[in-house]
Amino acid sequence: MAGGIGSRFWPASRTAKSKQFLDILGTGRTLLQSTFDRFLKICPKENIFILTHTDYINLVKEQLPDITDIQILTEPARKNTAPCIAYAAFKINKINPDANIIVAPSDHIILNEEEFVRITELALDFVAQNDALCTLGIRPTRPDTGYGYIQYFEEESAEGIHKVKTFTEKPIKDVAIQFVKSGDFLWNAGIFIWSAKSILTALEKNLLEVYDAFVEAEPHILTDKEKTAVEEAFITCPSISIDYGIMEKAKNVYTLPSSFGWSDLGTWASLYVEKDKDYFHNAVNGKNVVVYDSTNNIINVPEKKLVVIQGLENFIVVDTDDVLLICNKEEEQRIKEFTHDIKMKKGDKYL
Image 1 (cartoon, rainbow, N blue to C red):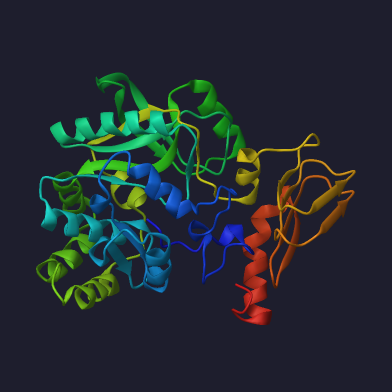
Image 2 (cartoon, rainbow, N blue to C red):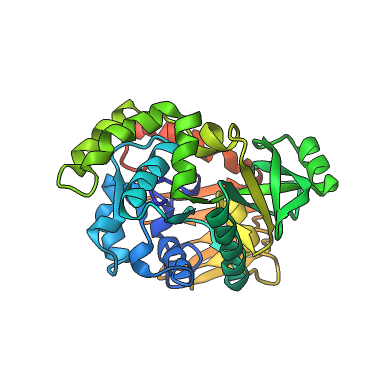
């Protein structure tokens, strides 16, 4: 899935080029390219499909020149994850009704790719043999209130796989602390594994409006009428997440507790956690940054620009060609407020 705007990573992430298309880690590969590389260890390149907004087709082609047009599934409108996943499920089912599917965001990082491959192959084997919707749950390392949580039953249904008891969306801090202490809660990574048959059945049972929209479109998929049919399907679909529309309602949901160095890179603060830091705990992306009397900052600036920072503690500093953001890390949730105000006062030029 590569269609989001990544608004919490403003001003580096913009509507025209959102964070999945950026080398936000400074590795020489964008997040989308790194995700594509990771999945080449699990399946051949022709089996990798990119779900993205129509605005990003050229960016996808530019960054992933090895994929074909049939592998790029475009969303004419952003309506959360359920409609785009339904589109992919119907298309993959038409290509191969015996397919097993992994759904993954393109803007996450995974540090231990060998363990990720092992875990996903376990889950693929399970869904190939069972009518099951499986989600990878991450063993929590802290009581983070920015993630959803999955509670699971203790007994195993298969090797390492447990039936899900409850989902809880972004709890308050005290509740998150109790979840982590209990030992039977996981972070919801938003990585799903299922067969084409199982997800289509789940859509029919739990999200009929979305299912019916793509039943209408299905005869035109893989024809020259696909684009028009999908546009019409999206018009009738509600904006709804796969978590709320399917995973919280279905009775055949399972999870595989995992630890493979995962982060969803949802915010500048989450990037700070993952980045290497200097002696004073500053995470710096930029080759000409000079720092004095400053600690615990994340600094992201153009490589050619000389930047001198003095006396900052616990700040986000992001400089682009036309925007400079200086914001306390503890106030970063206000970035959405900032962009809303900028839109009202300045239009879309800086967004």
